[in-house]
Amino acid sequence: MEKEIDRKTRMHSAEHLLNQTMIRMFDCGRCFSAHIEKRKSKCDYHFNRPLSEKEIKEIERQVNDVIAADMPIAEEYISKEEAQKHYKLERLPDDAGDNLRIVRIGDYDACPCIGSHVNSSKEIGGFRIVSSSFEDGVLRIRYRIAQPEK
Image (cartoon, rainbow, N blue to C red; front, side, top):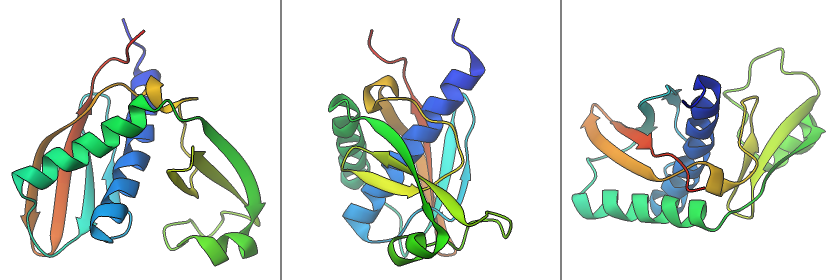
């Protein structure tokens, strides 16, 4: 049986791919709120409408393409001053310190993060959006992941 930490780690890594896909497709920025669980997770975005079924399928396709590409996931530390030039830091806690951890998924995504990650995108497993909703300027996307192929 899969350990909970492994699944949450995979879910969190999938969140990074979903966020970058939303940026690339809609220029909406990363989610402003996320709730990562072992069975189903959700991300909330500032948005102006619901997603079409075609858009949902395209998001899934793009995320799954990155997963299949088996991109390495690595971390580096940079100064907060340098990070401010490249990343939005409004979600960082006040006590984040002067050196920030940047998590990179191949050449697809990079952002400050304190969470756990898999070593390669292929370890995430299949990504599927189970539902989405839109209300009062907030788009919520709920997703699941499947066991990665061995």
